[in-house]
Amino acid sequence: MKIEEILNVTSGELVCGDKNIEVNKFEIDTRKVNEGDVFVAIKGENTDGNLYYKDAVKKGAICMLEKMPSEKIGNIIVVEDTIKALQSLAEYKRSKYDIPVVAITGSVGKTSTKDLVASVMSERFNVLKTQGNYNNGIGLPLTILRLKDEDAMVVEMGMNHFGEISLLSKIAKPTVAIITNIGTAHIGNLGSRENILKAKLEILDGLQGNTVIVNNDNDLLSNWNKENEKYNVITYGIANNQSNYVAENIETFEDKSIFEIENRKITVPVGGEHFVLNSLCAIAVGKYFGMSMNEIQEGISKLELTKKRMEIDNTKIGAIIINDSYNANYDSMKAALQYLKSIKNRRKIAVLGDMKELGEYSEELHKKVGELIENIDVLITVGDLAKLISENAKIIKKYECNSNEEAINRIKNIIQENDAILLKASNSMNFSEIAESLKAL
Image (cartoon, helix red, strand yellow):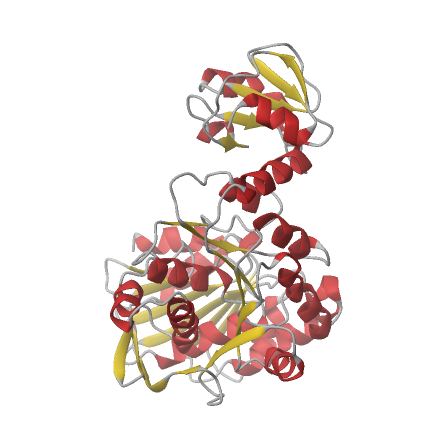
């Protein structure tokens, strides 16, 4: 993209520089800037990107997209709002590509489903996918602006409030939309699961065509599908055998899951029944694009999960750590605990922390998680809200901790060589700190 294009799309002003210069990619973090990049200065809650423009120049940034430049260095474009400018540029970039774009949203399972769908599609396409959790109004545009030689894209869309997914969908213009689940994540902001459904359905606002893939086991999505007359809905499920893609004869293990579909066995290189559901979604996508079951099976076998999603590490003494600590809500807690319970021949330890953004439902949902605690040997909770999990858990060995450090010390005192230790909490609880300490044991 040339600077002249940036000016035209953003209605920006070139304060200094050459409009004919071509730029490589866009970055908001000076630590990731390379030669020829555009540094987009964004003012956030904790930092102001405008303060780091000199660092960006030193790293090789060829252009700065700013609101209020401090001094004239290199090529500087001034815009009214750098985030809106980034979004406009992403929408412009997307419009230049006539390629399949799969967009994924849902209360739980977005990231792991994205990883599976991208892995399957990579058997047929050169796929660009959302990195990490770049699924908001800044992350999704940055993903799209990385488009270069790829002939397909798989993007994740997250939200906290109404209107956010609508904006993302209109930028990405998906050709296929996926909704994995309607649960309780962000219910504190939206007020009800029905409102969460409305917010997730905003993914249809920018949909090109009419194909939607949904988890038919989810009550709200199943009901929506029954009432739908507008869209071509493809369904998948385990419990709902009326779905287009159904898994049978499911077996779950510590490090894999096996199921049957279309008279063949599929092995998912991750344990847990919820990954069978995610794999069914990937199969539905592959079939939609005309891929063979051999291609799809190969793609599933090559799955590489995003960090802190069911990330399993071994300790030196032989215990395993299941780090599923990127985020947490009732539905993902339930899935993670079901996986932990399914592990055989190991003592099971659940280390659970606070779940955030639940608003007035917070106490109720933490208590409901506590009621799920059964067939688990030890429960350790961290945080004030997580104490409600402990109070409602019907097991004998349970410990309430006020900090990660306290939890680490507690685990060190009780850990055994055959333990399976699940770490699950909202990201702000920083449970990766616990994971890193335990790896050294």
